[in-house]
Image (cartoon, rainbow, N blue to C red):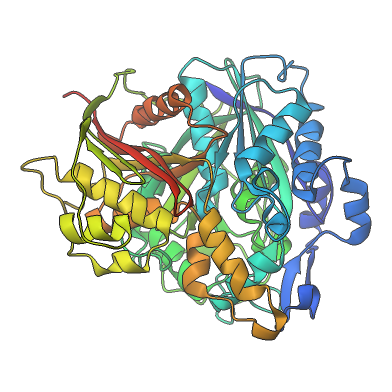
Length: 568
């Protein structure tokens, strides 16, 4: 069984979980209006650390992002007697942009999330290769699902799962370019909601495999599902979110659910979608709450922070109020907690969604009233059906080098014209997206007789890289670097989330299974295989496009993808 050993929330509301719970219980928020910050032309509301708090959080030799993560993990470790650091422990870091503020002046070692994770691991004395989950807004939930899968594999005893993002001109301007940011405190699910607030925080949850103690929270299930519809707009009917929720809950009796903590960004389409997803899953009578009114959208920290706060709130016997909610502005039948309510039941659900069409849910139950009753499939090794590898000037299909188009022009564009040619959206993608999309197309072309567009929910897309979305990051920075020519591009900003490539593949092929992108310090074949094998044990995945997709620049890129299937 997978259970919670310890946790921490470090936010502008407080530097430990107890203080955060106290502040939320009092209805206090860290969200404030900021005008002229980072020379941004538009005002915005956000939850940000104060200069005095940053002084307290400072660690010599660490960036603000790294210091925040290290301090959160160290605080969490003080709440368990287990020797987690010295044990068989995996370290999973959830973030969307990590040290992005160093992009303008830093080296790749300063900027790339994998390097930040390695620096954090070294500071803590962790020996395992760190895994960075960069899966848009659902990163924190994806990280928990991955941690449980890794623990269930039997190769680890503990998992340190930390999430963090620090706000910056880069991030805020990007969301402003999408017309998604409000300059007033957000109002999730409310009729008058006007958009999201951003926030910064770190959160850590430490999971362990073994027998829980009485009163500990047990990880009971988790799932991810893709809308397969659009890289930014969620499914209007909440199809992918409802699927993730249903898979995560399994056979759990809805009457035993204490509450569902939703994403609740206070954007028009997200809240509407979540209301429809909850209704579609048959959970219209279950209390629902959102925490963005206290913290804003903390991005890579959100899925972990909101899970931790929800578990502790349930322990205190309370369903936290959805701050800012007054009158329902969604059509789905849901029970939004506008005020604190008594908590009943023994299970807490965290629901979340994000760009790239991804959705996730995790379920925790109280031991011994609730226990892990999942019937996990046996550890059957997946079989590689086909393999495609693309390098500058080289193409290999199932190990055989293929001739390249002889016409002049960029290699990937020429390959697309020669081998695909029927998906004009290809031209709008960034280099990472084009590379992954094209490799997947060539891979699937080898599957003779397959129904390419089958609306299937048993096919996953799991990709790895090292450079995150560095090329799109640099291009977007160019649109905001000059105050005299400030024109943030929404179409470029979207691709600064590297997991968008997984969404592009899912949308093209109508896949509704799990999609995820993991960033590693190196192309570690053994670790990648370990993650892929663990993912196949979710009870839902029968087929997967998996492998390495990395693009540092136009002269340095590689796609190495396999089509994997479970034997019948």
